[in-house]
Image (cartoon, rainbow, N blue to C red; front, side, top):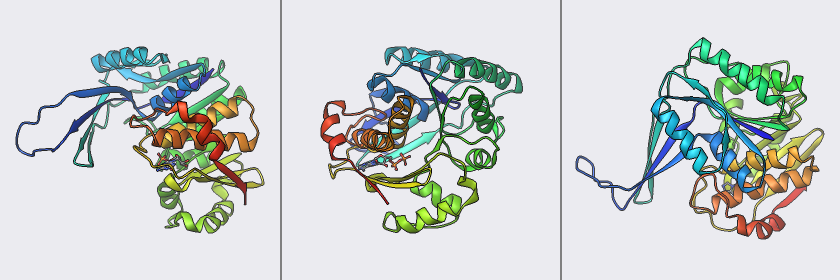
Length: 311
Ligand code: ADP
């Protein structure tokens, strides 16, 4: 079983408009999805045929609705109830633009967090792999993910951590390291205080190798959108390039990449298979108009065209 963690989920509501008229009425047909990065990971894992359990925090009427959306998607879920309402995020697609209104989400109490930690300890003991995605809600300390990594390590369960900012910093500084981190190029430049481009991948790889904070993390992956990714695994450095098929909607490609890593790592695959699987998932998501959804019928075509080389 692969356990996905979404601490700050959202009901994603998308509105498609020909034109957004400001200061007037716009009539819209909403499309509502169980959202948050970990839910994208869960949906892709379901497409890959994995046994998935989604966990995290859910509250109020919106939380109950979110549960029914996950049921409709066939995602098994076991979330800890909280008093606050699960947030709603609005995504207005208009004239080639994407205007987003993102609620910050509820504040979490110490009791709710303790209840979640107890549930996580129970679920992780049964998992083959854990993915942790996205930001922490208000009231949760920045080192909370680091604590979850340590709990998973007690059971030798690999943890794939996809977060940024203070919660990533805390996980990098902790004694027990995650199995994989996957900052994108923007996130890694923010962390290093640099401005590397995909063309400077060798310099970026050298800077990362020299950075103490990444020492001891088995897989360090930097995803670079259309430019693919590069990854360290132990002493090896790999570059992965995806085929030049036009992207339709790359939102959720990073989450799909994490799903691919979880799928392949849980199956005990070799490095090249792990990287080809992850990059195929990212690319197939970018080719699909839906977020966190693969054009699965083109799997073989893309998988065979993804190139992985050792640098
Ligand atoms: P994030 O969503 O976390 O910012 P990226 O945008 O770097 O992540 O995308 C993750 C992976 O998905 C990339 O490494 C690549 O394999 C694939 N990918 C993303 N966008 C595209 C694109 N436009 N064309 C081809 N592949 C893409």
